[in-house]
Image 1 (spheres, helix red, strand yellow):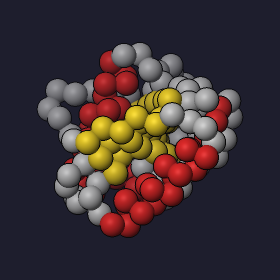
Image 2: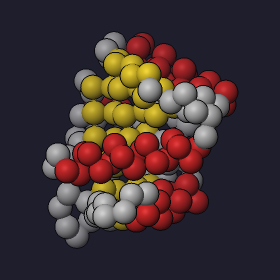
Image 3: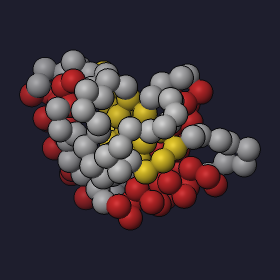
Image 4: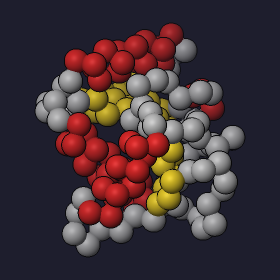
Amino acid sequence: MPDVSFYLLASGSAQERYVFACKLIEKAYRNGTACYVLTDHAEQSQLLDNLLWTFRAGSFVPHQIYDGQAPEFGNVTLIGHRQAPDAWRGTLLNLSAHCPENFQTIGRILEILDNDETTKAAGRQRYRQYQQAGIDIATHKL
């Protein structure tokens, strides 16, 4: 069973949600944790890919858009709208509106919700799915 954490942002800004995601990705990278970022579509993946280069001066997080192929180097953050690679056991940061497939096999799932009603409604649905699977969920209000 994965460790699941929900981060609840006070802001309704999608941009602030993405910047917070970059901070979590950077923290995972510095801790040597493999991270997959699940998005809803290719445009969202590209937006996050671009933001990881610019969100903080001096920050460097090796990352790439996941195209179905394993990365050439280790500890590279993968970003994609496809499901995580088979047998993914690292951290999955979910920025999509749905639960990751095979979420019970993932080591850790991070969910970031901003104060937008659509985002919160989708987040509540995922929260219920995790609960129904018997997973303990940590919630962090920011």
